Image (cartoon, rainbow, N blue to C red; front, side):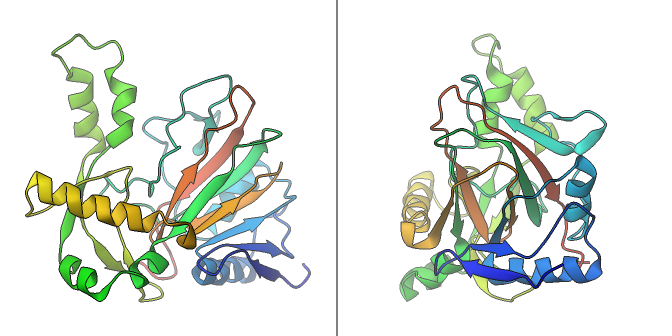
Length: 281
């Protein structure tokens, strides 16, 4: 392996990395190097990587334990941890909103590894935003106001997967989905377990209500935070090419997959990493 090089893409987050070849599973040295780059840049990108499902899983496992099959999306046959994200042929997009993955779980995942299999000629970019940079840029008064506050997260847009065809006045499938997928309460501000840096932990996709506030006051506070968090100054935008890889730290970022490519094909394979084996017990 040649010496790796990181080219930062924005001041807030994101770097394109060269010098790695993922055709073979990463050894401990490679895994440690990727982990350090991830902590430094929050989301990292690699181009021209020819990966099998086995090597994709091995890359994710170099960071931690992989997640079981997703509750909504399909997976590759014989590879339950490799989720297929395919919104081709006009299928309804449900990732084109700012979100942090699975924050309606009590322990949201550490990271994700996303591999591009088919990309449209134009469109289909993905954006990430740094919640560390967003927190740092908050006025001190707002920081003081939100410290110690917690918010409720639930399945939000995933409701659409369980309501089609339900009779008016009924929501049996939705109630069952809520029971299976759950809700969670998280602090609005967390400290990163590896870097110790504070970051916002809420997102427009799944954060529904601030604990202890009225519905009106909660909406006002969340609207302020969401407007702030989605400023371009905190973002990086990645133009996909075939056989590219993105790895992001789900604890301190949120992301948005643009659904602007019509009926063109865009197929991604994703493995989600449940925990950080280097800093979490």
